[in-house]
Amino acid sequence: MLELALEAERNAIRRYKRRAAQADALDEVALKVQIEDLIVDETRHAEEMERILTDWKT
Ligand SMILES: [Fe+2]
Image (cartoon, rainbow, N blue to C red; front, side, top):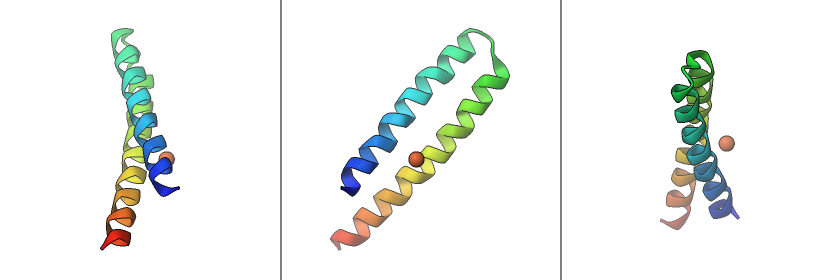
């Protein structure tokens, strides 16, 4: 269950990175920054899940 949630976070990060690159290519600086903030949030979520999974298995 938690592994699926972690994979969903990682997929979201991959998709947001693509969207940030597209915004950059269109010179949409504000949009790119907003998407990067989302990447920060999702990365934090993924790291928390990785930590929980690591602690769970030890
Ligand atoms: Fe998330």
